[in-house]
Length: 155
Image 1 (tube, one colour):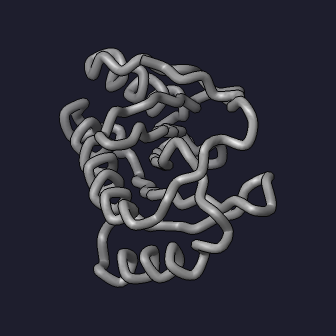
Image 2 (cartoon, rainbow, N blue to C red):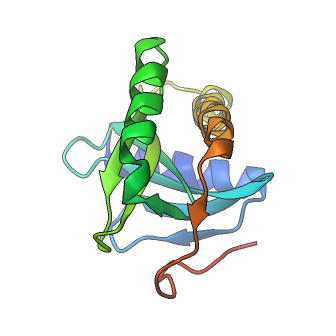
Image 3 (cartoon, one colour):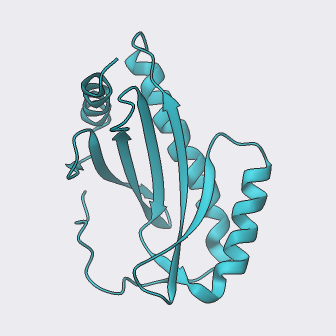
């Protein structure tokens, strides 16, 4: 299995799904935006550079949260993660000290005999779980961007 195989699967998935996407700075790295009302979610798909047969999917809301919400967000992530779901919620810092983020991530070893349908199911189920996680954020107010994002809004 090579990184290019995983990269080819990512490109086929994105092409078949019709999602507009951007290539990242690294080989095997792609970004797209998914509409999940009431918010748009940013999806990052990447073939692991060290292990080309590992796909990492990371989904984040388009906005950050006040650092004052860290405790609540951490409790939400901890509760989510205790449910033994395949998608892990992670609270993380940002470049702005008064803002924090939350992401939903999942990694998977990609066998060389995986079908495009199974590959797509892995990505789609990860995004669906992220949508469920972020639906629980309705009680937290998302902050507008601090500065224009270097990631263009696609779609």
